[in-house]
Image 1: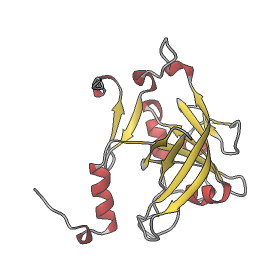
Image 2 (image 1 turned 90 degrees about the vertical axis):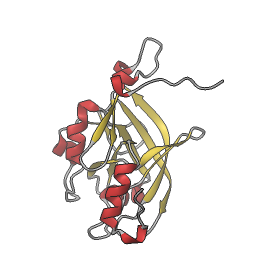
Image 3 (image 1 turned 180 degrees about the vertical axis):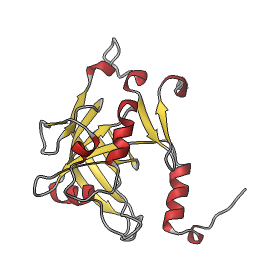
Length: 206
C-alpha cells in the first residue's frame, strides 16, 4: 500500500488527492449579493447537512491556491450573512460547471451560465429557478481553518425556507431520487449521477 506523508505534497497535489478520494460530494450551488447589489453564483462541493434542529448546512469556500485570495462568495457572506443554496442535478450540470469559472467580481454568473434568477422570500440573494430545491439561509457563523492557499472557511448556514419543485415528488409527496436526479462531485473533471442504477436500498437493521 502506498503511504504518503502530508508534508511531502504541495497544496495543489493535496487538493487533487483529497478531492479524488473523498467522493462523491454533494454540490452547494450558492448565490449571494455583494454590498453594491451585484449577484454572484458559484458551486461548492465541500458541503453537507449537519443539523436538523435547527436545520443547518455547511459549505466551505477554499481560499484560492494560486494567490491565497478569498472567493467572492466568502466575501459576500461575511458582509451580508445571507445566501441561497440550490441543489444541482443532471439537467443543469453543464451550466453549474460554467458558473464555477474564476470570473471578475462584476460578472453575473446567472447571466453567464444562462440561469433564471428569481426572488427569495426572506433574504436578498436570488434563487436559481432551474434548480429542483433551493434553500434560503441565514449565516450563523464562519470559521476560518487557515490563512493560506487551500485553507477552508466553514460557512455555517441555517435554513429558514425551502423551495421544492413539485415535479420531483412521488405520489406520497416524498422526494423521488430518480426524479430529483442529483449530481455528485468526483475528482478532476469527473461527476457522478445519483439516480437509476447508481442508487440502491439497504434496509436499516432493526
